[in-house]
Length: 451
Image (cartoon, rainbow, N blue to C red; front, top):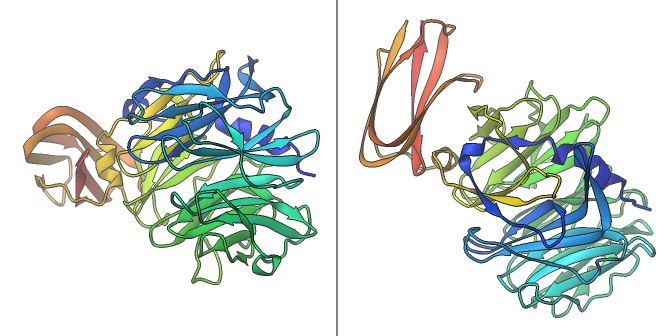
């Protein structure tokens, strides 16, 4: 029987992730009860939902309570948040997943620890009231709920008799149909649980990971399923998953004994996983794709660096190494809409951080910046001149990275339309470097040779 052990193991990683503070605007969420924020479900530019688990702060960490849960909701793009509680509060159990389709409608799954039965709750009035949904899940631990659109959704629960339990709806959750066992490959055994909260979607496709690191996937909104074998050489448990517009699926596997992670990529059309683990794979990472950009963003709790990838994880570019504000989960809808939970305090998670649309937006987008950019001399020995001219005023960055993506120089500018910078390169090793100028609209890069 699955227990709350997974959630407790996850807490170390939740409290360890960091992201650069200057990209975020603090907004008060003030959960109805002291809570640790877990998930943020972004519906659109204006609407998002979140939830947190109750407890108390003790010895520098959050001592979780499985009796109290709160939710938060915004309808104005994260400027203001309202909060409420759930009808199952007071019953010991686990809120395992949340989905939302509008400002008014959301779903959560709750597992009662006394019976290990799951119940699906829904609201149609922005959380003013919650009712049991029209589906009997029974003694099946629900791992994930997801809606592809207003009408089509899927519920994924752990196996019984070696069969995963999956339901779909095509009418916004008014009725649900259980997927035939014939359409779902067997679990290896009843202990091959789904990993709670670890799934990825792209269009009609959905993937979820299991405790054996096998990945189940569906191309038709959950009606029929296939399964991939675990990545060869994977050691540990896959705790992060995302996908991109090209259909690539990314899985991060954490080894609890060493604290190191492995990073894998695969497409539905491919027969095996590709190991794209970078050499600096210490500790746990949080990563996600940025929809609409073809980019990945990665945070690593062993250092303060934040990295982005433009080539499906084959290489990473460091864009900042500031760690002034701790974060928990981070979620993006696109290059300009994103949220994160602030670090837990003695009063729980008090703030949600709204992504500010800084020059990082330009790096995350695929837009080439409309500016005049010149860099000289090339090759360079001691000093490189970076000149930029734009027709509009904006906040800008200059980044210089080596071929391995390491950040060797960064400078930030506020509300300018010209840059005339001389950068000392005398102490840089010989080699090729990329100079990037970016603002919130896009980015432009030039290569130089240091001799």
